[in-house]
Image (cartoon, rainbow, N blue to C red; front, side):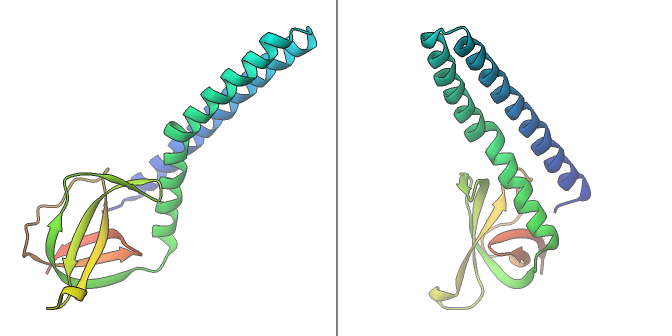
Length: 152
């Protein structure tokens, strides 16, 4: 499911966004310091407030998701995975954020009882697999994140 291209792309996007974020934050800081050195307190405070608001917005919506996604991919690449044979119960169309990564929920059953149900997360950036309720599959996972899904 994940290729070397995915790892490189996530790392590159994270670096680009971090550089742009810190460059923008440094520009707002420089503007604030210029106004502070000119003894213009109102513009100095205004540039600090606007800089903080813009920085918070950019970090929350543009930088942080890529940092978390890159961290997840690095952990998937080096972490311990496990394989589970199971039966698909439900695959959601809606997405949600889990640990900063947008995912679909995948509920499977590994046995006959209700307590044998497991919840996995499918990366929303990846194409949804062609599976239906009741299909027998083998899931390779890192924690609750699906790394690979194979028909059994």
